Amino acid sequence: MKNTTAYKLIIVACITTGAVIIACNKKLDKTNPNSPTVDKYFKNSSELLGGTNAIYSIFHSAQLISREWFFLHDTRSDDVAAGGGQLEPPRAQLLNGATVPTNAVMNSVWNGLYTVIHRANTVIDNGPKITDNATLRDRCVAEAKFFRGWAYFELVSLWGPVPIYTTQVTSPDQFQPRATADAVYTQIFQDLKDAAAGLDATTTDLGRVTKGAANATLGRAYMQKGDYANAKTALLAVNPGGSVYSLVNYQDNFDEEHEFNKESVLEAVFFDRGDNNFNWGYTGDDQPNAQPQSTVRNQEYSPIAWRNLIPSNRYLNEFENTATGATKTDPRFAMSVYQTGDKYNNNANTLTDAEQNGNVSVVNGVQKKISWRKFMLIYKDNNTFRPGGINQRIIRYAEVLLMLAECENELNNPAAAIGYLNQVRDRPGVLMPHYPTAQYPTGTKDQIARAIIHEKTVELGGEEVRNRDILRWRKKGYYTTTNEPISYYKARDEFLPIPQAEIDNNPRLEAAGVSRQNNGY
Image (cartoon, rainbow, N blue to C red; front, side):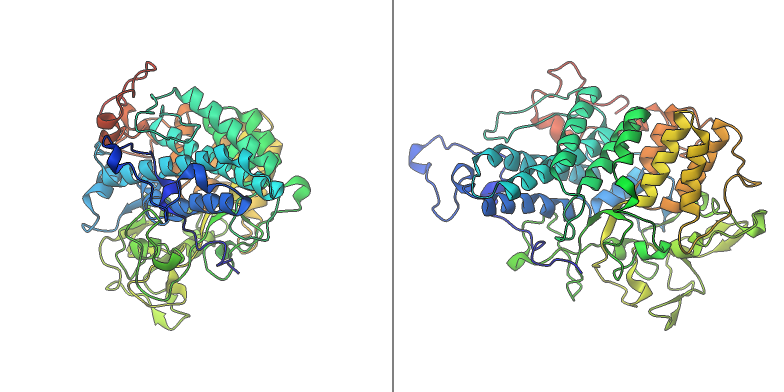
């Protein structure tokens, strides 16, 4: 069950303010006694916990996980296609490779990530003052370091060089320049190592970050940097002795009844509030009466709602199928997507073409209406507008195993790599034939890499992983002009443009010798 007490996340505005503005007229320089300043607020561990909960609040907000975060990652991958002409221009820009520095989706994620960093810095800076509960204090600081490391990894992998802030901003002139990607990664590695050292392996306060989440994110970061040896070390630390995580039935990773299962390494917590309201205010701070946060993912992708993004043909045709020569049709296909004729709403309804507005897919040469099933509420509901309470799984143990497979292959340990791949294929509800198969031989490093790319696609499609994988695999030479996964790709599109607002407002952006804007924008 979700811990509703821990996640009614809200905190006084003074804690989340980016800077203290000093009035020129001293007569106006007054302090509101009902809004304590940061320097007077953090006096005990309970108040530090409130500051830490404010980090979770922005993490869950529409600026990040409950809306714009999944759009930004998905539209930069080839897992998705436009559901139809209704896709809003900023999202269509991202999907089609026409992103501009004023793109609203991109700007929302940038601002959300730096809000995470500011709130994390506030907790980290004020932690040393707390003496009443050292255990809680240290946990709060470790959680803050996790989120700061996570946010900088999001930033560097999406934008490249970005400004680094490691202390709380207290005045409006504390701008920082773009740091090199190497410097950002150094900060990420240190934050995530510190977080892993200070967090417990498990928690009864479900939804809070753990040692496993820190090590898994650290492994992701090392892999993206090309350091497979250190990535392997971090990933092996996720599940020491195999005692914390294990694979569960595949479809249990995407519904509301099986949240916080043994496969879940990191989840963003959401609640069905019992109505059709959603916090379009984005920041997570304007929830009346500290109401729990919901996610609008169900509305955006649902077959019977807006259907803004649908599975791409490339993704749909990646699944092994007896119709194309495989010995078994991969059951993950039917557990990942809906198609016309499928049952929904507890099997009370049958999905029709008419209910799925927009575009048609082509699978093995056959035209069909196909939509996302992962994280969609219609398995138990037929509401055409319903912000949902299904937790977003950010990291699953299956991904950890597949990352380890990639590490072992790059470190020239083919048997270990194949073993990790087959662990995932052995998972409950799937039981696919082991590698090698006729379609996926594993006699060479390149063949194993192709099997990894395939397995990661069918296992993690639509889970905001693929876009970073594409960048990493392209650098490894796994893509050529004949199998390039994103047709519009050119050197420019490796990174997003630095937001125009940051260029306009930060006078020190290129002070460290890094250009204010990424190439090509």
